[in-house]
Length: 378
Image (cartoon, rainbow, N blue to C red; front, side):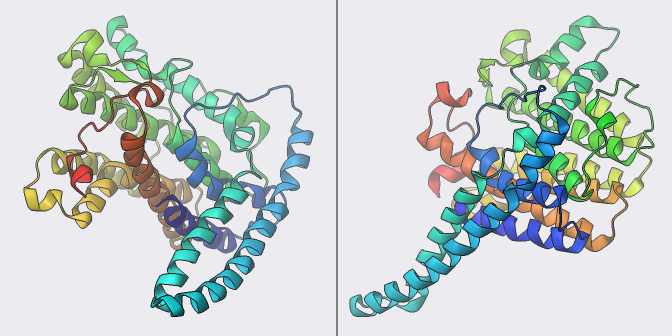
């Protein structure tokens, strides 16, 4: 599943790169990183640390050398897979199998192998790790309130070391950088401690706001999910509902949604407000689909895909589109950004669900098979 989902996402991001015209220099590397993140984010369980000692010039030099190797490995494997497919087809004819079976099998293998090779060429954390840490620090700042007990609970999963994979903010920063070939200005690597309801005039700051808002919405949904599932661990820690009770966990989730909504309104972009508000609606709908479904629906793959989109892919897809819109790009580029986020979100959740079967609670930092009745039967 990873190979198929990742390759669709890879094609989407390559289309977006071509449309945006970011075909040279650092811009190319940002696009490769965004495509590679589809596979990397699902396998990574702990964020790599970002070395602040490396100079900007050294970073740029290293980044510029990566894309060529990435594309070479992808093309060479594609050519090799074609030869293998021809050989396999001749053999399959003897065994009574058709062209479709042989071609589909080798296409899946080639696609997966190509993406695996391309991922090794890009260090995503080296590209956006520092900026991502600034976003997390800002979130800890903006969830502060006059009630210390509420602030303590709200920032529980934003503490240093337990921020999680931060897949959503990573994808958004990569897409934002892809649409700005020269990358962010040095000033954007500093933490913005202005009020959460402040209107930022810089395009990059607006895009960073979307990353912050998306992470807050995501964590709010986790707080609510843990109450519904009666979960006891999350990211290797006791859940908020176990530590402070269900009522406090629900209120903390509501508080994060409220702060995210005010920050969203401060962007003064009605289309973006509509997109992110739809994500919150989708989260509630998806959770209801997961917890309340008939026997027939539990056996439906289409039902599972729909639920997966609503609970996971919708937030990533619409946030990617919002980043493009805030960058003042046209509708076609915004749609391509949406497509990339959609495929990233779907493939990430598919892998996350599979890990519930093959992983352990200790390695995942959360209970396995939690609320996965539909997938279990499929």
